[in-house]
Length: 150
Length: 467
Image 1 (cartoon, rainbow over the protein chains, first blue to last red):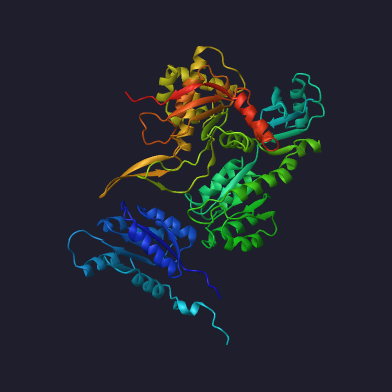
Image 2 (image 1 turned 30 degrees about the vertical axis):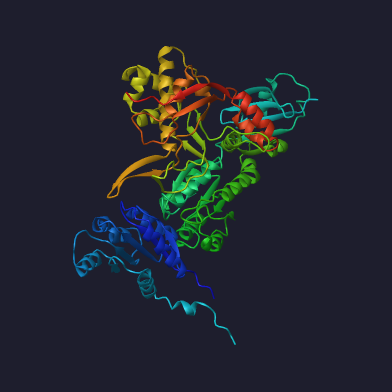
């Protein structure tokens, strides 16, 4: 049986115009069987939240490439809670901070801000897809198709 | 041989009649008489028709009418997120020619339900959720509407996954299914809902209002007046298969209680440096400013524009303005006399046009990014529109129409507002827009020819270059 696809709200947060990675990620997620609500670049926290409410999204995947991610993402989890999106998985990846900082520190800071998964620059889409499967407790894609009775 | 047709607009105060020859095509005459909605609108119609010049074949000429009498088409729109489905529902209702009395977002409360019951809407448009999206909110709201004391038709045009459950919840009510007004986050689909609104208006609402005993007269009413105006403007902009239209246009219909603004233009961003944000808007867009009317909403205009602006535009002092607005509020039907009153009316009309078009048009915002400044556009870019149609009593009778038209343009102090920059101004001097919208249904070529002939060009205005 064709189960409804899981819905992922995707976008590049803040005043960030990096469009290429966003397109690649959207394509990869669609190919992996997700329904992608791609908000594109320069997306505000409010837009992520409004889109997730209206579409009843299963997760929000935030990208940030320009080093201001920490500022842009501050309070996103609290706003999600406030908007009734309690517990919605939040994932983020990209060049999240400026300067040379150890990634484990960066990841810890973003997790403290309420993100479920935090990824360094250069992460392959497959990593995010696997994480989404894990978080959303999806079975492996092969099981989604009916088995041939013979 | 003459082939006359009678086109009627049952307005809230005036019944306007327009006789046309469809074949020639020619405008044979226009007239108006007070609407008699409290007894039978037939009386007012007869009175208006008696004022037409005597013409052969007029007595048994076919009739087509639009109506905003007896409150017009009173609607309430309900959505989920204010900027998304609630805005989409709002646009759908306004585009259908409704008088939108209230928009609700999120889950309705007991107080909301009481308010809805008290407002006695003709139709409630219930939306919420993209297809496959949120179902909880629209189901909650359907349940609330089912428990409402007042009865009204509910059009369910939200998330298709919640359609069946909503119809079940509304089983005791008159509920109609409709495709989602916002099937996807980046897509509006208001036409099916608007068609359903129109058919409900024809089948139920017109008869329910007790406008007339004459069944044939009621059968001739085809749409709410604003829908007829929108149809005329779409025809004027787009043309027909045989005749080119005028291209993108903006229209302002200024009345005693409201100011309607229409735009027929895609309004897409100009240049690759501009990014479009927010909800997509329909090509034929109507907005209504219920707080900007030059008789019944003078306070609204003063509040919006500010006393300083009205003082500067009229040359009157605050005391005179206070006295004149009290006078006009007391007797809204009275024609104004005297120079002070005329200057005051000019300032009111100018301010209403300025702010109604400001709310209708899109705007740009500069965002500074590490890659340099980026322009974000929300709403429609109307800067390239070259035609402005003006309609409504206060504009038809204005002494300085071109002076007023300038307020529909972008002001030098607001360079990021996407209002038109330079337009040819057409004045609907005989108030034929609704009639031509009606005629467009059967004889689009005749209607377009008449529009081009009867909308009088009063000149061209251009944005002031900032000092």
